[in-house]
Structure formats: structure tokens, C-alpha cells
Image (cartoon, rainbow over all chains, first blue to last red; front, side, top):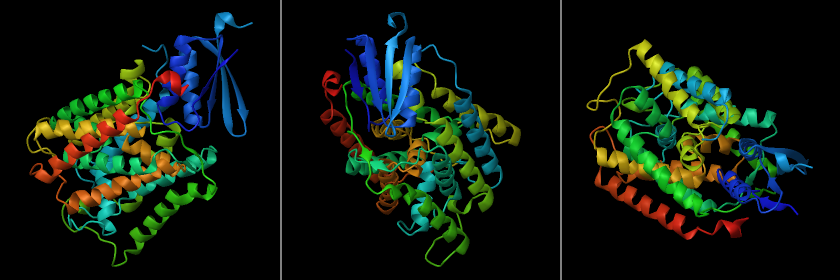
Length: 75
Length: 356
């Protein structure tokens, strides 16, 4: 069951702050982040990689869906 | 510390911005003022008659160029999207007060770095205040303070507002109609050739849009995440302008008689504290706001408009400082701004658990 973090429409650096909070708590094995702008996507990608996580990026209707999983838990 | 490579793009953008600043000064801009979003937006406010301080009226091509460069790059990168809705009226007011703070310090965060690179010791006090203000801002951010979400605007053409205004500005700059003011004395009369300034601005806009360079994000992210990513760009600007200043003979270390600066250190600290805090709440420094406005971010457009209005009010109400010092109106305005920031920051806190 993935945790969904919706940061669409939020100003810098809220997307990173909220994603970081979810990654640190890691309440489930997957964190899905919904993003609507390129710059925020880049920042969250960097954050996820710095946590050593794997990230999958899907573009949907102009928005981005990032699925972040801890590398050692990837099936 | 985040384990990440330092970003070549951000560092390059910073260095180029710093170096080009020194070149602009060499070609006629006021000293330590190759770029200053606050001073230049104030000059534009004067040029269109929003204030009548005769020594600071000029349709600064650097600002027009930054908007055009950022807009062009955003369009090519498919990032030009009209969106807004995140407490726009509050952003207008915060923009006004960020400008108030910058005009009391006599520089936006970018100019603060340029002044440091010129040897202006007064800017160290500004940097101290700036850092404290950012620190307070990060405390609010950690408590979940936010101006709320924006969404895509119905009329996608809004993303053309700033570039069209900039084109209009360029036309007025060349046409010189009687209702546009051009300073004949003082800092407003000191400028590099129009095409050089415009070109420099366009380059800065492209680099700003491409690299996301932000002079408040650097210290902010260092405090929040121990990430040096954006800070490397700010340091790049410092290095770029410092090296060229040495080459051109513009580097003069000291506190007294620094160009377009004053030594009222208490108010250098407090005014930049306001700029730092306000900019963190707005989500970017004045340079970043200008770049964001050019890609259609309506909240940033409103912020820039607020900054221009703030400049007009500052000069009309004698709140702006000068090399002679800080005025009473300026001190009151800075205190007012700090109070507004504190109220907004405190009232928009929420637990992060609820935000997710």
C-alpha cells in the first residue's frame, strides 16, 4: 500500500520538505509523489536519489507521478 | 550533508551572472550594481512615473532581458504554464515588503552578493541579517507554514503577460516618449549601453530559468537539508564578480564610502532579515521570482508587481534609504514588514501529518 504525497501547486521548497518527511517516516514500502512542475520534479528526484532510493517517473496529463522505493526493498 | 555532486549548471550560471555584473559596471552601471532586482525594478517604477525620485528613473533593460530570456527558455522547455492561486494578495504584500527591506539595505540578495564581491563590508551585516531571516523562515516551513496550492489557470495565455510587458518596455526604452522618465543624474543615469544590458539580462534569464538559480534557496536548503546544491550557485556569483572586480580594479574593501551603500549596520541586518524571511515565505529570491513570473507563474507575477508597488511607495513615502542613511519611515516600514511576515508565518502553520 503506497503512501501518496500530493505536492501539486506547492511552492519551493514544500515539495521536498513533504517528500522528505514521508521518506524518513517510510510508513509503507512505497512513496508516490504527485508533482505538477518540472523544477519540483527535479528537486524531488535529487532528494530520492540522495536517500538511495529507486525512482520511477510517469507523466500523466502534464503532471508527474514519482514512485519512490527503497532500493533494497524493490521486488 | 546530502551526498550529491555539485551541479555544474548552477555553478556556471552563478559565475556567469557575477562576471557579467562586473562587465555591466565597467560599461556604465552603478558600482557593485551589475544586477539588482530591487534597485532596477525601483528604477522601472520611476521610469513609468510611479514615483518621482528623479535620480532613480530608468527602464532597466536588464530586468526586461531577464524576463524575455527566461520566457523564451521556458517556452522551448515546455515549462511556460499559467498557474496561480496561492494566496496572491498576501504575495503582493510580501513582495512589497521584500522590496522595502531591499531598498533600506540598498540591494536585493543578488546585489548583496555583488557588494560582497566588491569588498563592501556593510554587506556582511546584510548577509548576517539575511541568514537569520532565512533561518526564521525555515522554522516556519518545518512547522508546515505555506501559502497554499496553486493550480493551472483557465486562460493559458496568461503565461505571455510578462514577456509582452517586457517587449512593451523595450519599445518604450527605444521610443523615449515624453511620459517615460530617464534620470539625468544619479544612479538612474548610470547604465551600460541598452543593447549590452538587454543582452546581459537575456543571458541571465536563460541561465536563471535553466539552472533554477536562487539566492535565498542556497542558504535555505543548507539550513533545511544540509544541501549545498543552490548555495554553490550563490558562491559562484561571488567568485565570478570578485575575480572580475580585481581585474577591473573595482574591488575596494571597507565599510566607509562604499558605492550606493550605508553603514547603519543595525538596519542593514534588520532590512535583510526581512528580505530573507519574506523571500523564504514567497518561495524564492527576487531574481527567482522574476524568472518564475516569466514562465507564467501568476503568483510570482503578482509578487513582482508587489515589489514594483513597494518601490513606488518606498520612494513616495521616503522609506527608501540612501548612502546618507536610513529614514524613520524606512525603519517603520521594515518593522511593519517583519510583523506581517511573522503573522502570516505563524497563522499558516499546520502539522505536516495533516498536509500529506
